[in-house]
Image (cartoon, rainbow, N blue to C red):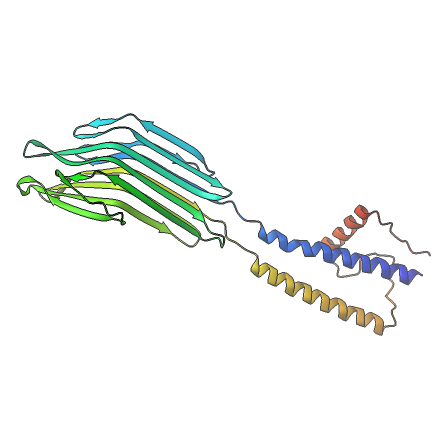
Length: 298
């Protein structure tokens, strides 16, 4: 009777331990937090005329929604109508978005003491989106629109392709004006992606020196995706289960070969070599199931 009781306790402890170990691979599916970020501004100018990014919004790494607008900009030959910007992001589902819109843009420059209109456009909009794919990789996409664009008084056909570049000479060959339409710059790795979309970049060069740069309707989105794990853990778990099964079968064979008698362990319910973790799991499970420990009779 004592040997049977001990065998029963041992079998039950092993079963509960296997159940507790079977749960462990599930921890591998817990993923680190995904980060999102973004930025948008209406207009920025550097050179003879300086305008800081106006208006500007920045997205926190934890996500959220930020918006801002300015009624107009009017500074030394650079004017606009309403400017509106926004950025938003979520961790689940993982996504980051930024948009910027500028109305009624007009840029002029001083050529030989004469204010010369350089660029005009009625509406400029940019959008940048970053997101995580199901396999844990990161990706971004974006676009921009520029309506009624003119360069030195001439209409410019906007094709929609990335980084469309148009250059024209200033009056009297004083210099050049270069436009980059739908300017896009990307950075990233497998699980990180960042995309900046500028609806328009204007660069004025006089006598070989850049005099003025204006960036209009800029949107940036950025995302870091948590790695997707599980395949290797599933395989490892399968190998462990198979190994455990082989060991248990081998142990069972040895017990039968010895005549089914287990060595006297002094009444200990857990055999020598059982990990403390497994023993604890078995004991807790026994208590939770309301199983009464069987004590050997002297």
